[in-house]
Length: 128
Image 1 (cartoon, rainbow, N blue to C red):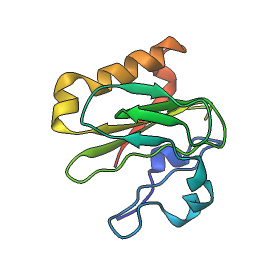
Image 2: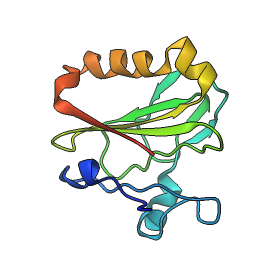
Image 3: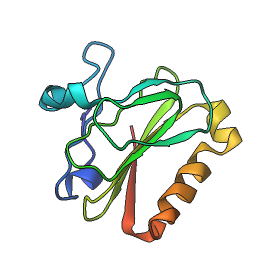
Image 4: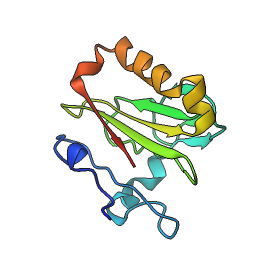
């Protein structure tokens, strides 16, 4: 099992990976850990624009940034991590997608956020 997505590997200017119970962050992402947003995932639909490293986001389950050098992450147990990237690497997003968030429209909320900066056609998505 790989900790990477071939689809996201093709995107320039981004690094990504899927962690595990034993290693929440893949080793190559550890140097960026100080940039992780502070957050509390609550199985909701709130999307936050992350504008600066280590930003306090409060309760949220979706994260979006156009800022280079910021690591986005979501923690999951029986939920899905969904990673998004613009094909040119100019913006990324991450969603914590559990059954409640999926039912309430977290992915639709993220698509709406992406559409604010253009269209969804220029984006790729990987489910961890």
